[in-house]
Image (cartoon, rainbow, N blue to C red; front, top):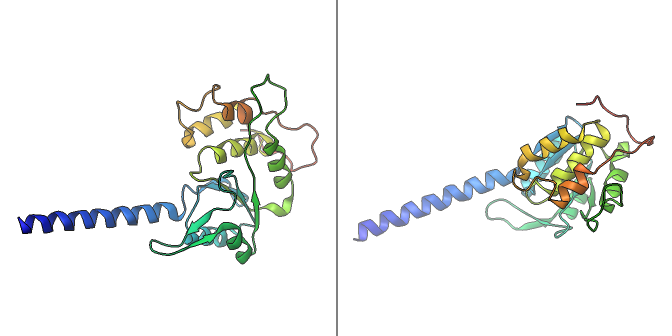
Length: 206
């Protein structure tokens, strides 16, 4: 009986250790993906170590946090460490920190006012000194996803359909990624790139 209890305890301990290792490794550079090489990247919220490594390796100049519920999140330091505020870490690393709050307009007809954060987002990205830039939310799927779709359509000339398909493929979810979702509709399906803007030149259409 005692031997069985010891075996069970050791098994549980090993399982918890492997889970902790997996979580730490996974969150180190959580869902880090390339949007445009050398220019624009996306992710979820990383650990302190992963965040610092990413900024150094990709030469990030601007970090855009779109967690409206956590405008200055505390990043975890390693498996047993403390925490550090993201804005403080950016200041320490010499990186510009921008917090944006994705919003929704009341249900509307196409052509009406769009979410105000879109214009705030474009104002940041219109400036060449912003790049390379990293955008992230908590998971790196939904708020990050719809704004990356805006980037695709505005600066790379992607069609609405292409941006929508990438949004779905990158984890927004087949059931959630429909016209019934206000974020999908207002940020992607209703989005129209600016005409005659003074921002960056469009990339080839995909």
